[in-house]
Length: 389
Image (tube, rainbow, N blue to C red; front, top):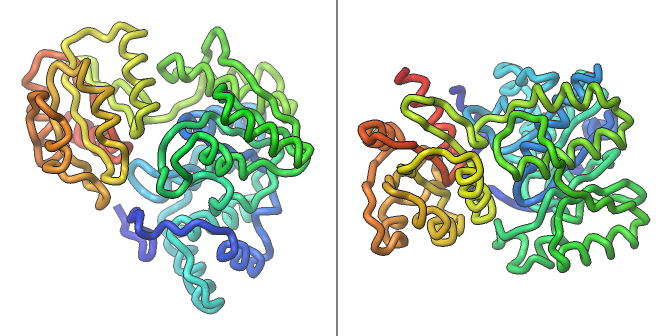
């Protein structure tokens, strides 16, 4: 994997705000205003909705940009046009150029701001018809919130990134509803009264139509889990607002692919990888295991980012984990194994210093292997498993 100077996953680099990116984009001629877009925020499900909409729009015959985060393996994945990643050489060159421009303007862009600028300029140069844009963190002060989309989507509201977004559903809803623009329709699947109250107030003030929808009854996408019915409903509603025909919607949904979302990477032994990294995401994973009747016993391989609610996530896992293997990803922000050990209480666990070691241990056990807790851990598991086979 090519290391790209100035692009880092370190959370110490997170600085919310729009002033810096707006200044740089203005200098570049505002490339983000040269294509139509769909903006997606929410605690969980953003990536799945993005993947579905991307697939639908491509099936409808459009040239489509897709901007998502984080990546599984490399930064290039975050910027795609009709399914193809931006080339490494192009990303390196653009990153160096944007860095020079920012320095000349005496602006210190964060890594996420840089990759966002690069995506917008790339999509403008490629003359995409639509760009599907996933919010990085929150919404109101997220670097992506300089666009004026055709439609906005807020999938759901739950607890995550409280250090940036606040410690209540009301505060988190306010931050994510910050993507709502005047007279631009807003789709949500959220049902919590305190969140909807925020949405309704903001939509009323901005004369934006709020569409509160329900999950589809029959799922068409291959993504696994009943929670995907909600994501699918959001994608369908957005597509209809864009006047996409039913044939393209159906075909696009059926062709949707989004890795590390309850992804079965092996059937013998049964190995499932999921990027669930917060309490609500882990609850959805546990529910999916029950829904599709994956055979027990379960061996859970877990690892987390150190800034997550690890104790809360473990409370979801421990009651159903017959075996627990604790490890860490290669991400610099991964929680230390010794710190996780303190939180597992009386649960018996095995500790492995890497995902490779954890998989070796798990493969000796005749049971379903479930890797979860972090997208970075999920990526490591897929990579190691593919290499080993």
